[in-house]
Image 1 (cartoon, rainbow, N blue to C red):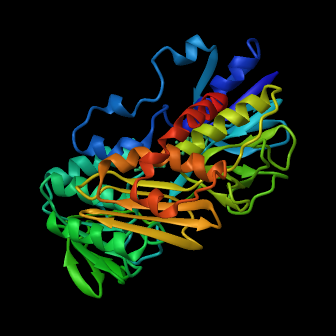
Image 2: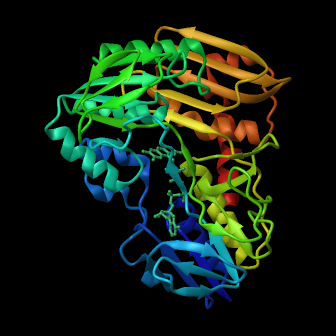
Length: 402
Ligand SMILES: Cc1cc2nc3c(=O)[nH]c(=O)nc-3n(C[C@H](O)[C@H](O)[C@H](O)COP(=O)(O)OP(=O)(O)OC[C@H]3O[C@@H](n4cnc5c(N)ncnc54)[C@H](O)[C@@H]3O)c2cc1C
């Protein structure tokens, strides 16, 4: 069997390992524009952490698993072959599309000026690091989890940072007003100017950015766009695409033998809605499932759950699932927690102010996925750790998934 994997991020790498577990002899070719790394720690890299923190495989990974690695870009997917940017054509029996996502650049006049960056790749982070050294003022456009991490990192590097968010509060769609306010006041305490409810109308300057207009004019030496991502789709024939490559619970697309996983895949979430789930955990899980099925296994994805963590600053945030339905809230000292329920079943959870809650993410996902009834909701938001006795089951479930 000849396998081709497009992309070597979390999804591609985990798919390759899963295929090799089942098929010791098949030819596996991984084609990727970049070497394997995770963007999850890019903000740490900006703050001076070694690049090796981003590496996701050992140096001998490809050799050990007998994988062929081609550094290149897939331009087109045909019936049983892919075409690379250099014109080379490579045939496959099974294909995985795991090309991730690309940053969205809003159509704002002046956005192509120098020193306006996205924050998606190691190259982006390296250039920002260089420019930040000789800059005093920076703007971050977008106050989602990644935007806030960049704002934190640039502030730590000594820059005066302005965060501009077009919605009325930070972390829109991720947390409720109370947590957004906690985060905003923490960032203000750190010296960050948070400007919400304003759209960037223009970037000014000759070659380099000089200022941005968002109601008022703000002078900056650099700007970082953190305005969302869209799937990175090579040209494809006969494969169903909506927001991303539409896949079933085996991660197979509408075309037999062609699979998709990670940021590029539009899959059913745990609540039965087809959506993109651009998170590292989803990419890893979906990659494993796709790889297993490509090599003749038969495993099903039980559905992704959106999860966001903002770990920098003294107001760490965890947000998991969907924030709809009845809710129960707990406030105590610096801690705020809110859980959402459908009857007795947990559907969403958000917490701010306490670092140890970040480690609840696995437990919360488990309770949502397995529909474990939560009878005492008040106790749950007060002491979610008390549900740790579920962790034995949780660990068993994880072992079953690995
Ligand atoms: C700054 C930042 C911070 C993040 N922090 C978190 C976090 O804290 N927690 C979390 O869960 N998620 C986080 N994410 C999201 C997470 O990193 C992604 O969801 C995850 O990396 C997606 O994995 P993937 O394998 O689908 O794609 P990627 O990891 O993006 O890998 C895609 C690969 O495909 C290659 N490629 C693209 N196009 C082609 C082509 N045409 N031909 C060949 N190769 C191609 C690329 O070079 C790359 O190697 C963060 C993302 C960013 C950018």
